[in-house]
Length: 173
Image (tube, rainbow, N blue to C red; front, top):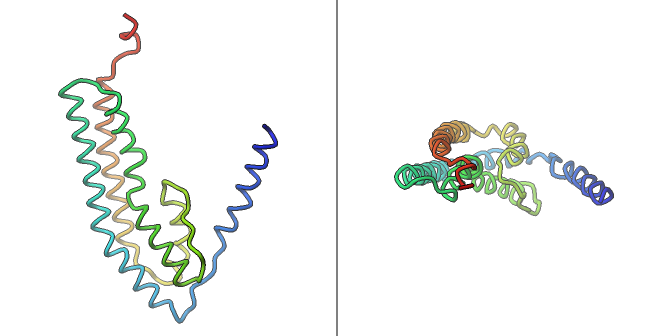
């Protein structure tokens, strides 16, 4: 078992540098890259905000259902998942699309999606390209701020529901 874990950790740490290698976009394509990435952001921004709003509405409907009908474990878990997984990954498709365009069109690399439910690794990869090509990130920051605000709202829903959670001792009767 120790050998398996060691091999797994070694393979993980040797793969990370491969993903982190920075290859600059040619200067002749810099303006085109900036325009295309900003267009992707502009196109996807309203959809990301809409998706966040829909998930918050769904979380509220689950909370309201629990307040009306009593505690339901499945609905409570779903609200928690919205807060912890769904909302933090709301812009994952946007970042995936930007990484795909960056790698395939401008770097001549084969795009292989990164298995993650968080945009942080994608942002780490894309940030040097955005910085070097002066890509306007204001809408990406707006998404992040809005997302955090909505996560806080759903967190309140989770707390409301947890107040109704029965004690484990109640099930012993």
